[in-house]
Image (tube, rainbow, N blue to C red):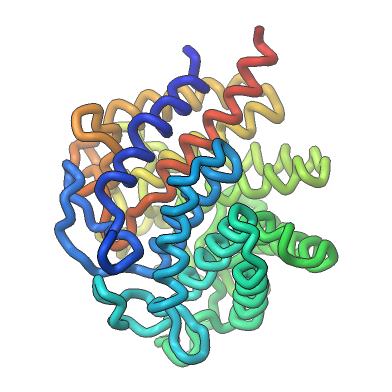
Length: 387
């Protein structure tokens, strides 16, 4: 099968047009992300992390696919909204606003900062706007200052059970590569060193080969719900970030370790009865407290497709392609909507569509187009070698 053509055509003829047509707020700026099955807007609140993600997506497409002025204008649409409405007086990013930019939820979530920085970096590369480039750099520096206490005054825990979370070192390992043209090379390498150490030595459990979502600061495990929590999608997504770093550094040992981890997580988290990857799991197989634990989510499967494609591109291991075909067949037959466009986000354990939205508070214009782009490019290289 010509996977590269499938992913390219789907990206350019399905996914991108869906968001171009349905999400842009031409009156107030920014993007609507709450879109139903057919693309109609069902809620007008705007979430800053999704504004940043969509702006990044269109700037990335402009930079890496085609310097289409329409895409650059769409990217600017999001950047302008974030600049005008998305920040408080301290330049911290609100979590959400009304459709016309009135703040709704305070800046408690550092991921709004992360995706704003990514958007600013890609957009400045596309537009050449120096002030946006500097804003990307300043936002990144603020993220580093916040990383030991990401929520600041909005942190709810008392500190009695000190656990550190996987999400931030995971995203930093990708963010720093996104910003490597903006920040100093020394800073890039220092951050990458720290991310590799955190992801591969602290959160990756040497005994099981699985990534834990929360660990004690010294990397040991807490026997509690939070301490036993596994998020297979996070672990697998982080591994393709590690592979990207390994490629950049020509570090074959890191690529192999990341590849082995992808396979271990996938084997552990694949539903043996209905297929698909579980959303959450308990490391000791105790009852999970996450009520959505057995749902099958779009981003988990898309990130797995990217990880398997990159790992196979780098190693050529047949077991990766065997798994790729399993995950590909499940994902395309369950999430893709060939009638209305885009992908569903949420399935029940049996693989039936649970909520038929195409976008919401958590699903926006990011995982689907990014995965389509990444798989297109990986399989383009793989297929060229097979000719």
